[in-house]
Length: 497
Image (cartoon, rainbow, N blue to C red; front, side, top):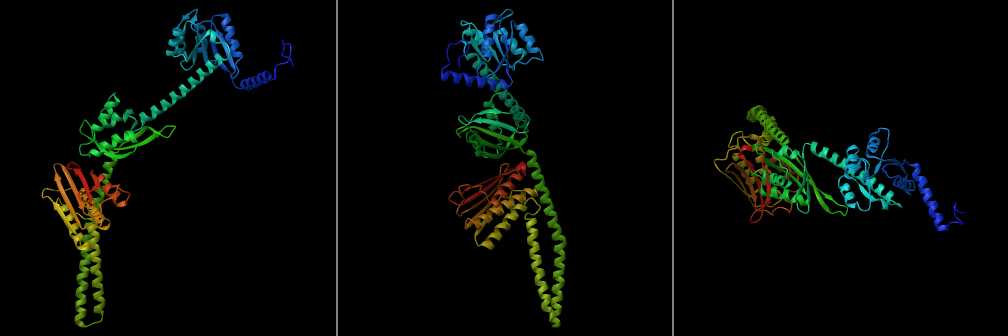
């Protein structure tokens, strides 16, 4: 089969290529065409551009050509017209150079613009790209498939830039409207690369410099927090490993509780290259926990008092009457005396169990020295039941008037002693309660086997101890004691009692 105007058949390879291109163009025509606005005042250049667009291999283009910038802007403003890209000459009758690009960008900033220049206008073309054009071509490069490739690349880059801008806007809206501090850091330097504006609301201080924000963040950590809290926060900026609750001091003197978490972000190779974190103000939750603890302590005090004053007194009265009845029956030599003796014995057991129940509800007497007395009683019971040495050191000036604080400190000491007895095989335990400046400190030391590598552990008892410390505004530390054994320390400021 001969091609029209040719004297013979096409070579097989060329015929296959023509057929392949023809099929691709048919498939492309099935889709919506790409509408290109061509701004060109030269008739010959206009015809060349239109021909190149008609002969595009991959994309079906629909060209609309105008001679002036004014006509182009009118077309772009027409609501009924469709434009996907602009191909603009920089030398027009009514516009020269960058003014053309800037005018198009002002009218339709979302459209990709490819500029056409003469071969000696490359510097102007590069400047046009800096002012918003996607790409540029010299008029001698329009031939072949260069025009098609350039337009497709410009359209694709614009689409990707638009999607990126939309994603960034969604991220901005999310980050700036959540009621928490969202932050990102660079694992190479450990520096913050983003902090949302909520930081200023929670910390009460802000800055335009990320470096200053990082300094403000660490500097605001409450002075009573251990130094390791700062170390963990700074280390997390590189590692992405953090789950820490701590206090900060705001410039106005108020204190906020912060729960800070971090997670690593991996690149395509699975390497950590960013760390994302969120710091939540949990002050209200802490206050509610404290109130709940105080209400619970008050309710326990009430129930304990009711049991002691009512049921306890009734059991005591019944026990006395029954014991008197037992004695009378014994004097009369009646067999029922043995049954009465059993009732007396069972009442004594019930009284003992009731006393244990009341002690569980009210381990600390309701007065400023009640905690000291309760710790001494704990030590005495431990020595009596476990046959190990347990001592208490408590300064005379230590007074804990808050029943909730005293009760939680007692239970922390109680759990520490029980752990030393049950798990550490200790022979000596010491309990110390002291007031150092405005810091109340409870210390329980044993000479047992020590603690595992992970001091906080996963045991329910240890978790409850940490929770009790947090409820009363304190900090619990569990570490190896000097010379072996375990040292449990709970610290809280006097204002938190």
